[in-house]
Image (cartoon, rainbow, N blue to C red):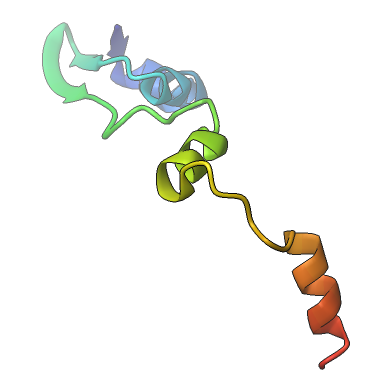
Length: 78
């Protein structure tokens, strides 16, 4: 996408949104290219697959106690 310095100044939120999507922005001043903006890395829109991570770490094993049970038992100690 091409933008002028003026567009960048007055419509930065739109330019930033495009950068977040991973688009590359070319900045022009008086018809000369002066800068090229690109995102460091596009942000992921989705959460990681926690169940797949759990299966990779623990395999098919099941926990002896649930997290809720561990927390409720620990509340009595403190």
